[in-house]
Length: 110
Image 1 (cartoon, rainbow, N blue to C red):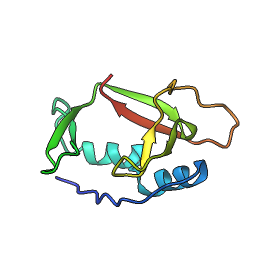
Image 2: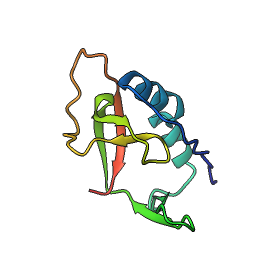
Image 3: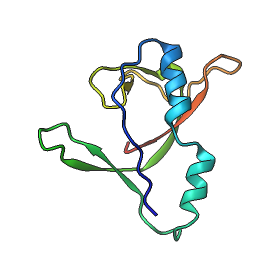
Image 4: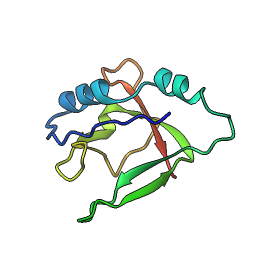
């Protein structure tokens, strides 16, 4: 079963707008588990991302880890299709307990 997610280019300005867009657009862990249950456990999982060239080459991205990040680890970016980027100096897994920042699970290659 293939699920298409429409990417909408929209500039996201501040931390609140970034958090709201992630909450609105991202698949939840429950949704992901529900959809993955339809496949055998040994089925490989990858995603594709637009390489950004003129022909929009779809490059494969391999998942190796599931990391926990705080919404504060993301910022608006005019250079990404989603309008959101993961900050380069992220620590991953450093969400403050009791803060207003929600947790986001990021599937990463490293």
